[in-house]
Length: 240
Image (cartoon, rainbow, N blue to C red; front, side, top):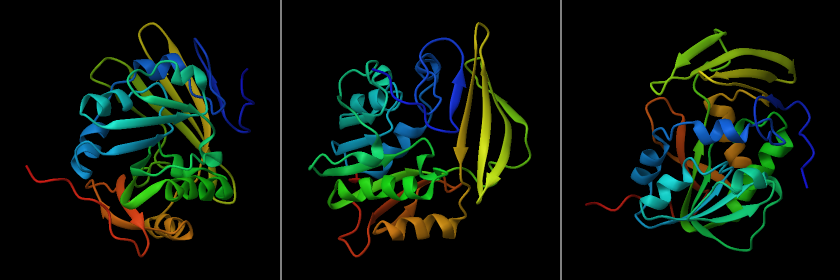
């Protein structure tokens, strides 16, 4: 049974489209990128990871190959059907309550920029709710000025073009963002809602969920390791 499309989110192109406008076939084609390396450098080897918004397992599979135990969560069963080697759970992230805790909770794909503030708060509460003592939450943020100087495009080394076409204000600080992915044999589009966050706004959002920044993991500040405020601190990688 398909889920209801999220208001303001849509996608076009071959194959199944998820409630937030993501195309399953598109995400199955996208390269892994640097995310698994960033995660592996930030947490202890063999950590248990709750990956929120896993999609087709683009990052999941690379983490499993590195020896992590991954529980992958996504609201799209079509996405989860592509995942191998990890436990999968089909659920909206904001409603998730497994009654379990994990060494690491991952909130990637810029989900922290949800346009609906209540949804963002619920996502971060889900992160905190599933965090083991001394564990950490890894969060992916949008880059500085990501909504500005549009349109812009990038040609991936693998041969496709990703084009951020527009980010139109819809009120209350949120934008409707339109992105195109052009491959030699197919084109996909996605329209979604996103709320830009300054560093202070991001850190205040964490604080509302009982979290605090432990470290910014990348020079551009797009990956962050956080922990429970007043907790034992986030685990650090084991030295080799």
